[in-house]
Length: 511
Image (tube, rainbow, N blue to C red; front, side, top):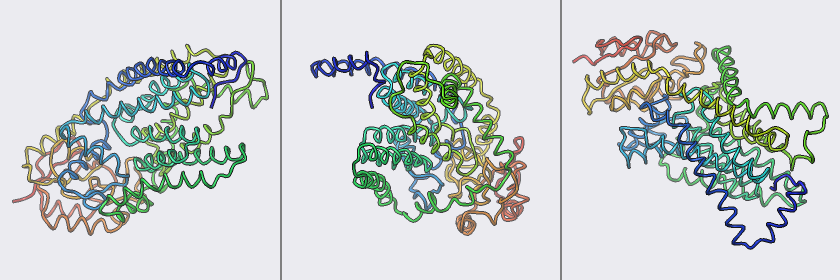
């Protein structure tokens, strides 16, 4: 796509087309050689707090523990399970193989790189639509607002962060009618996190709109998208030794987990709360979007000479598909909202670039908001992490590296911090009770709501050897041992209490 076709820009475009190829290449290269180092510096500065603590979220702890299990010979979707696609567990495993498994700093560094790549791709899209300044603005706005949520959601090296580059690449390739590459990018996005596949909707929208405008046949392009999408997924299925397990854990086995049951008031509160936080972080460019919508609603002319180049309908379709993806499962965790940022940034960039609004106040506000979130991340309370570390230290002291441990709770980082092997493939109690942190109600939580055959598998694992230590981290959650007879019986029969840390209880096997 081309920038806004004002007369001046058309004359400049004509002049540029008459320039020698060597000069045009130098101009293009010069733009990126100036912009990319600035974006890299901003990406690093905004995510410096991510290096300030060993683990930010249970997802990081889950992935780190998975990676260690895979390194010890575990089989993904068999003896090592999760409801997520395989690309990020494999990336964690690869980093641990190269740098060791004692620290997450290599993954945090790669997360910064992922943010940088996302910013560059957004800059490329915006530059093609609205010019050089818009390209730089889009890249900077993305990096600044990428920390505009709870630090636990934005500073961690988790699925959404690594999903975004492929998601934006899919949109960019579709915009340039590179349909095979777009399909491959959608597949990579989906293999990082399932909801990333929602970008397929705007890709298909652009395909059919392009076919309608140009009067060309769309089936060949649709075939390219389909082939590009299915090929990487088929290759992953071939690589995995348990492709049926991949289908179950990634696609068909999460129905109860993604249901609406639970504390719906809590879910709505989280949804509106995280939406408000993100809106506050991006208010500088969201206000121009709202203003543009209001002017269109009132049928008033835009406050610039000429019309906006092209349509932003594809961006709105992208945003709508991302909203649906964020809502799937009704959990509304803050890190889910990272998926909304790229289309919101592009819509905001277009609203600023094609109006009388100046870039300076938009960037100043977003920078100020980012500074608040950055400072909040550095000062983020660490009581939970300190207690988890204390429990992990106690577990390590009560066991040897050959012993296994069972954490009955939702904080698998205990395994990683204690450097002890899990006694089961189910790293959280959620697999055995259908509990999740986003649904704290008693509805649909209990042994009867477990993953299919999970308890039978769990019993077989413990029959091969009881864990030396059990950590009851359930607190007052609806899956505490008194509400799960099998766990209560296990503790009463085979274990004795050896430590209490706030609402976390450590048990050791009776000898």
